[in-house]
Amino acid sequence: MCEANAYLVNADDQKELIMEAVDTVEPVDDGLKLTNIFGDQKFLKAMIYSLSLVDHQVLLKPSP
Image (tube, rainbow, N blue to C red; front, top):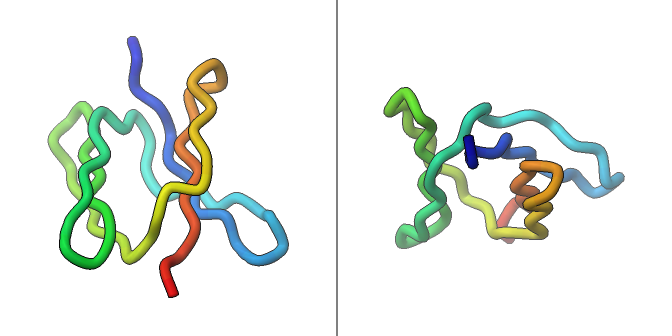
């Protein structure tokens, strides 16, 4: 499996799990759309901070 978990990174560099088993991350007008392998979707006003493919992590930061 190639899916990853998505985390929102706060100002203190603490990670909060947003979604497990993320399959796609797509840009939308004012943020990102995350979709997992079960078809669940979340829309976040965020930007990609870092991708750790070995650790299967998508790290996001809130957009200003």
